[in-house]
Image (cartoon, rainbow, N blue to C red; front, side):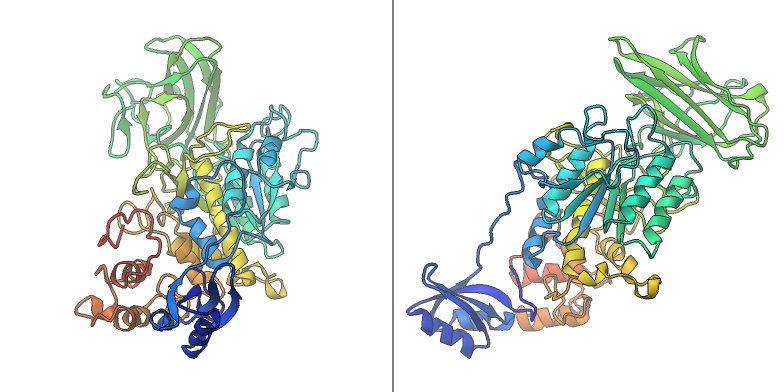
Length: 596
């Protein structure tokens, strides 16, 4: 369904006789005639919702139906997130496709992006030069990688009218790709586009509390009132099963740390306490281990070392033994490559140098195929921990029938300073062309661009959100978009916002109800005050459904009796009580199941 600016339903009225007679009936009952089409055999009209039944019952009218709308040729592959999140319904209901909005992506590279352009999965024009901050490195070569191509495809599926940009910081360049390069790319896009999304994780460049240079820069770029950017989304990371965090505890009276299960740490193989953490490295793959502990950066006085040993052996094959004498950072890092055809098991070992280090909270991120002891909590890296309104995105798989369960690898909060992360959840393991990158595309890297595409649609339907801040000062518009996405999300997991799903699964239709110009009560906002409240719910119950409210819940419109009036209640009334066929929220599977 689509509605005009006055909240009237756009419909076809099929006559029982002449077209003119049907048009007269429409005008008599409060509607307007947009055009008569002998070819279709109907009159295209705009009807007040309350008069639809009366028009349909008029003797001159055979029936009232909805028009059909064209499908844009946006390529051969469309992300499943488009339908699961009802983004297609948002485009149809509000007539938006992202036109007039600029979206920037930061990832590895754009390998084979021309193939996606040729198939229609990407638009003919993508600006990848303005914000290539390492001009000597070509982001379109195979060396660069193609995850950026896949991310842009998802954005284009959701917002096919948006202008696409790519920010290259030399991710796979042998001489670039530093955090300084990354920050330059972030700053460039923030100065040129309306929405930015990245899928980059950083380790060991600062505490995981939003104070690293990268995290602070992203927050500052978003909140700089001279920049046009209105939303920044980043993938929260895929580190829930490749992160370890517990206080140092001597193993068997020695200097090495004891790895074991705890209130927050999983012993994946049931091995019991060990003096090492076994990891698996695949053929021709690399292992990277980055360890921090909770000393101050630039003032670490507790000296820990990091070792990599052959499995169940004393043979050391890699080590990091930076001194910590109260002027260094609390960081150790090892990188090791498996140059064989065999899968290799190795042991990660943490040592207190001379047994003298005070017990500190250890924080290890381990890039490997399998990690024996892992800690989901606190597995948010630098950039994913950014504050200031930066949205960190978790993922639910497209194959999950109810869109209920977080992916096991999706990073969990809190950040080291106790803030909730992630902020929002979207869909991953979605269909892309496979040009330059694997399909299906899994990971929070695939979830984050869904938020960017949705943001573009909302910005188009509420152009005031794109306006420059008056007088160069911050305005409510700069936070209104992200607030609407967070506040209308569908709760998942434990009740309320949490460190697994954030505010919940993004629900674009409800966000549009709160933001979009000419909103017509698609989710129950009858009086068009951008709020779903008792006025709306009571009106629907009494005037549309003609059901007298009964205490204690329906009297206030609270369908699911959770003592909160929200989009769940309004949609439940419209869909299940009034019988109006609106798309249900993801996860509402059966009639009568109002709340997911």
